[in-house]
Length: 401
Ligand SMILES: *[C@@H]1O[C@H](CO)[C@@H](O)[C@H](O)[C@H]1NC(C)=O
Ligand SMILES: *[C@@H]1O[C@H](CO)[C@@H](O)[C@H](O)[C@H]1NC(C)=O
Ligand SMILES: *[C@@H]1O[C@H](CO)[C@@H](O)[C@H](O)[C@H]1NC(C)=O
Image (tube, rainbow, N blue to C red):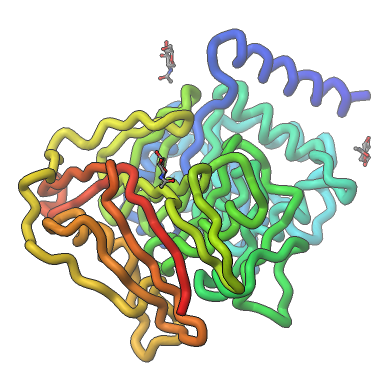
């Protein structure tokens, strides 16, 4: 009976959100590799949870291989570095079997914010979702807390579980383009294949599949391919390392941190072409970086005020090309963030497109980046003095030879 009441409370809170003009509340999604001193990210989480001295942060380390150790680390960080009033470990692990209890429901609801640590997102869903796919009491509490105005934050696996689309569980861009996407989750026999959980994640970010460690590990190909193969009607959101995006109750998203940004991937205008392997045109991607604001619900954006339109002011005549566009781990020296670098250098050149291919051959995928009717902005960061570029609506064509 109590459980039914709690689920009803969640429904009522969601209903209240709808009445007030929003259907979701604050989310902070980080791409992994968060530096302890990334105050833009951690400080924002504490502020959204009520501020220093007030915030009660629930620490969820279900994704971790060592949940207690990970929880101790985050408790120390949130309390001693960022001034949270409390940081309480919500002790749900892959094997604890307690997510569907009143005790965990109450503990989650007693917080003003939640932070999900990294590891493996499959552990989160195994623990928090019931075997029949419905939400446990604890998972209902997570949803109710957020709908009622609490902040839910996560990094790496803790962010990748927040979408409502098919949840990514692994895979490399090359293998994704060559072999396609596999439902049923991670398969140890094919560790490099693109795999996903068709039941989805926690669902706090409707209309999105979330990916992390994004530009660094060259995950652009796998996110495009997952969207295409699952025919998910939403978009992809790829978050870079030591960076995050804060999405408020209106779907207004702000990039946090100075290290990277987020790539929004939209395959709704893709033209599928014939062939034995991935062959398509016109995937649309937008890259937002430090200080930019964009909508998760439409195409609106406002770039950081210190960035200005690059049109006519591009630095170079020519754009470079790469034969390792997805930062293959098989290359002798792993190059991180190749797609991000090649795309920003294209926008800072006079050329209209640049052509790249994958490190892996037979087949080799040919990836063409096109400016099309998109636009780009650049400027020297007011916090780091680093030249930083953002772009809106670049199109990507994929073919093979
Ligand atoms: C799933 O299982 C729970 C009990 O664990 C039950 O209350 C619920 O009705 C089930 N949902 C579905 C959709 O079968
Ligand atoms: C959401 O939009 C409404 C209406 O424009 C506005 O009143 C409200 O302040 C916005 N909320 C946030 C968190 O920006
Ligand atoms: C490519 O997609 C854009 C929208 O992103 C659309 O306006 C355009 O017509 C498409 N181009 C082709 C050739 O399909």
